[in-house]
Length: 598
Ligand SMILES: Cc1cc2nc3c(=O)[nH]c(=O)nc-3n(C[C@H](O)[C@H](O)[C@H](O)COP(=O)(O)OP(=O)(O)OC[C@H]3O[C@@H](n4cnc5c(N)ncnc54)[C@H](O)[C@@H]3O)c2cc1C
Image 1: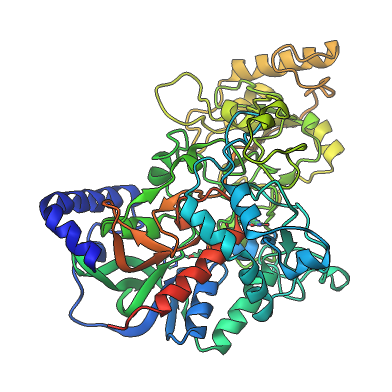
Image 2 (image 1 turned 180 degrees about the vertical axis):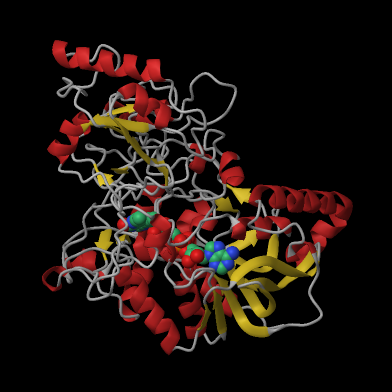
């Protein structure tokens, strides 16, 4: 409260101005997500429909641990979840969780690790990727210290809540920006839970050994329910209330439940665990103006959305963003190369199958590319832009750098410069005065279909929504590629020239334009195909400014009393995925429960 008074004294007018600007910005950025008449613009309502000590927004990797921890610490808890089910991106994740620092699993495997080693790793200025981008340099030191100090207890806490890990030593599988010094990745077991992407459990013979986020989130859901946490599904938070529109404690939230508006009171605190911002075009363009509308195939959608609603609601009542470089820097899987083509949702580690409860939204499984020699990739102008076999930017994990000298300029000797610019070339655009690279299309022929053993018909490909086309000639194909993000089709002569030139490279054995290693197959046998292969957006690595207690901090550096945040909606921490979300959920839940009830 003291902090708030200070801000008031410093000048309410300016603060009010900034707050109003934030609300206006929020309304524009969110489009239909947060209505202009957002509850955030108002003070506390006269009537509450429900109340609890702690309100948690989002039942994902940060939200459910926050809820369980808060209830374990004696608070009553309501979780509001926009989706029809719990889980968020965490439930469709690979369940690879980098929690180290000296866990029981590390000790059992004889792995030496400590909180200090985690802290040193995740603040190491000297680690840069082969393209020159640093994973850890812009991390907030207080946030990382809190993370490091809570790793061991979080891992043991997960075990205590009934989460089962695959019985093996920690490794580095799936880790991105998780530290170089020790293997820390643990993997939750899928067990017999139905997988969200298929609607079915995995084969009983591999249930104990298959990694999946379902094995993290279903046990946490069961535990939360057993402890009396109320989980309100299809309840979307649309605004956060403070005592007064511009000041005071956070006292509750506004929620939309299928068109019905509810006001829910928080006696102790509100925790934002809404999962980030990558699905909000205007918001993500704050950090990277290239990320325009055509990047519509987000990892984790259409299961749950990352629409920045948490960030926007908090910003509307004064919150700041934090550590924004971590979103702009080119490392990790913030933006990925598509793995499945011919469908909207092409993230390579998540293939939607017809049994999934959201398959009607995903619409197609996509065609998995086994060998990028089988296709060429062209931009909206029908031109190739890079070696199709190239990968994407990397990130640091255990032994990525070997030898490794912590925080030392000596590491520069080990790092070999390699720009890895596939993604940048795809996002480069085609010379127009607009941001974004436009759609990227895989072009291939009937022989490629045979080699890859694809079945290029629905539901493998999404013809109806314009993510897949075929024709009997290249010129005809080019003209047919008309869809929301490619309104004028691909110029036919350009595509014909591209294919002819590529075929000549197959004859000569050398890709004169992009150095694809020995081009192997001509594109020559009808029918010809164009399949959506536009890069996929994945993580949010920036978000709201928080402190080590996961309290949200305003534009003046003051804590917003009663407001907490963790996970992908929180900023200041460059790391992919679950570990930071779970740890921050626990920290937020614990601290919110310890607040004095109003
Ligand atoms: C395919 C895939 C694979 C992955 N694999 C891994 C992996 O192996 N290892 C790893 O470490 N990380 C992985 N990740 C990343 C990891 O899943 C996420 O970083 C993590 O789940 C983020 O946690 P969160 O709590 O911030 O958000 P989420 O887990 O996404 O939860 C946010 C929840 O908030 C809800 N919500 C959003 N807005 C509102 C609102 N306004 N009102 C109410 N509810 C709202 C959402 O519906 C969602 O349920 C993967 C992600 C994907 C998509």
